[in-house]
Image 1: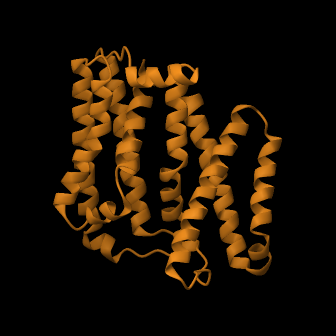
Image 2: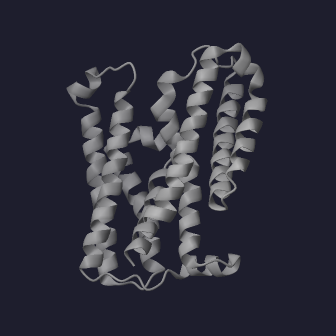
Length: 262
């Protein structure tokens, strides 16, 4: 029971905090409190959907309220911390202040989700059914538990992984590797993000069916496509290696957390 509630609330968090929030609105939160409240309202939608498609237990409603309210409080703290004198003066060669705040923000959100789920389950919360997910699981012929796990895993491997990578390693991006035409740059970034997502999906699929040797084929295909840049640009080769290794770590870690730990 605890496992299912944690999976459902984490899924709602990922949808609300990543997929229901654009990069522009994420930036606007730091400039306008109205945007912060708007994000908090939109963030509640997946949690309210979870409640409406479940057994509508009052304990679950209280859990949803606590999660939504705590998200708003944490975001207020994040915005306040971002504008303090310490952070505006903070400079580091390897770690950007935005990275520190981003990681602290997500760790607090996830920590509170886990803590509140454990508290409410120990207090008697029971999640009898989530009919929306039940229908999806029946349609594709898998168990509801696996349906939720795979949905959460795939969503984790796309936007959250791409955003986390871009924030963690933007300081290592080659300076001279930027196309002169803006549209080309935008298309290249989108293509790189999609390649990274497909790479991680293939990794977890091969990992789940224990076809470990097939992972090497994915890495080889990716290296062949980038061979020209790798052989001529040392800084790009280093950045490529960072991206490839971090992508593998993200994919394998997400798989273990979703399928083995929760």
